[in-house]
Amino acid sequence: MRGVFIASLFLIGAPAFFAYGLIEQRLNADAAATVEERTLAERRTRRIAAFAEVWPSEPDYGDRFSALTPAAVVLRVDDRPAFNPSDDYWGLPDAPGRDYVSGFCAGCHSLQIVMQQRATRERWVYMLDWMQKKQNMPALLPDDKRMVLDYLVAHFGTEH
Amino acid sequence: MTSDRISRRTLLAGGPVFAAALGVPIPFLRFLPEGVAPVALAAPTNEHGLSVLNEHPLNIETPAHLLDDRVTPASRFFVRNNGLPPDLTDIVADDWELTIDGEVETPLTLSVGDLKRDFEPVTLSLQIECGGNGRRYFSPGASGNQWSFGAIACAEWTGVRLAEVLEKASVKPTAVYTGHYGADRHLSGDPDKAPISRGVPIKKAFEPHTILAWAMNGADIPFANGHPLRLIAPGWPGSCSQKWLTRIWVRDQIHDGAKMMGQSHRVPAYPVAPGAEVPDEDMVIIESMPVKSLITFPETGVRRVPQTQFRVHGHAWAGDRRVDAMHVSIDFGRTWQKASLDPPANKYAWQQWRADVSLPQAGYFEVWARATDEAGEMQPPIAPGWNPRGYLNNMQHRIAVFAV
Image (cartoon, rainbow over all chains, first blue to last red; front, top):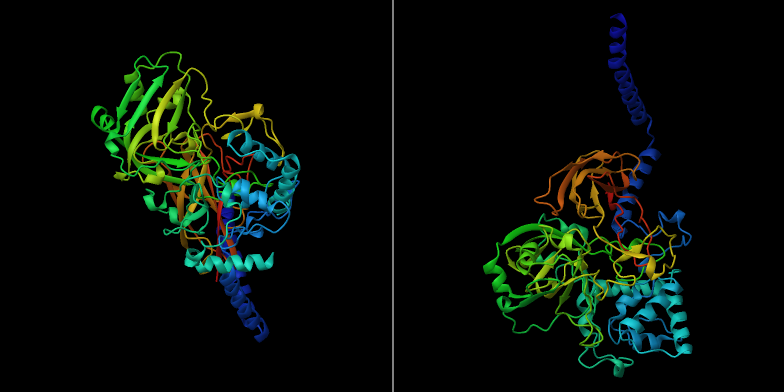
């Protein structure tokens, strides 16, 4: 009975003591805050507001949790050449293969779908074969196909 | 790259500036098949604020904060197309015909008018999610439209149960699978090719929430979402819910239509390392979608006063299952707080959840949301199970919140 009484005293007392400690600490901190500390706090508040102003608002999912991924590189879609309808080549980077990509891919679908990809070379091989075998894409000559693959991997591969 | 980004930002800000875009020389114009308009004039968002991933074929997703309604309005329903919509300039909805054939005793051809008249109509709240929702967050990239979180919607669909129609056709014991056909057209212009023709096991076809719908939210289904007739097979990849439905072929084998085979709507039969190429024969058909949730309020990037309680809420769903618990974290997943969770309006409806949180000090915070289904499965913090086509990413949704 006496044990229970002491235990309950402790249960009430410990949080009260802890809370008092916190309050005392804060009072002391407020009292001790120098002009420099207060202006620093104000600057921080302003900086957070400024960060909020320019923040793109989406948390960055691209690489934050990629530690276990072999290709732990920044894979943000936004960092790659962007589809641009007012460009003669819709924003495709100027490099060998560009004519073929715009001609063979944009014949059926928008280049938006091409320019979204971040695919490995193997994926691009698969996609080109699939387009040719299943989706009526005209066949590319072997040399042209290699050039197209190099182009797609260079600009819309996993390094982007 | 910097200049590219700046010019893109400028374009994004410009919006209607795209209207001036046509009139530029188009390389390889001669390659365009007859009747296919050159693709240009892309806008990053449509008039309702939805993100346009691809104009041709049209693919549009809804930002999470615009999915706040319990019943998704037509203007905020994502659009997924594999081909071009049918040319339906003077269609009379009630005259639209559906054929049921294959492994049935009595093949049927029913008009939408017949469906309305001869069967008992039902109205159900049913969620449809694209199998590739979340594809964007796989690393290395998985091929296809790079959906983020918004290829999900839950509307009130009115129609008749497919089971009742199949019973009228007397399905034979040899029936194994359905094969669905719609009136949309292949991108290459080849009239003999279906852009997509998927199906479901007979058991799913007979599930009482699998319906032939002609109305959404009390009005005609939006054209882009399948008017005048759409099959709704809820909780499974949206491709099972054929738009502009014209035929259900009851098969004595697993359906082998367009995008049933190969790697479409399939995942490796065993877990693979990110970036692995998997042979077609090792790819298996996706059935139920996994447990998932969204924070639909507040919008990501908001500001809240430190040490002041505020409400976050959203929806949760789990394919064939029910969501059992919902948690939120404001400290990157170190601690979790239980949210309150409503029961679904009916099976396959998404469930509403809400929580009050308070941020301890000024700074950058993220609110993370995590749903747990009735089998105890919960959403992972990272994109799970990399697969070549980037399906089934049910990672936790997060919003950025500045305490300031």
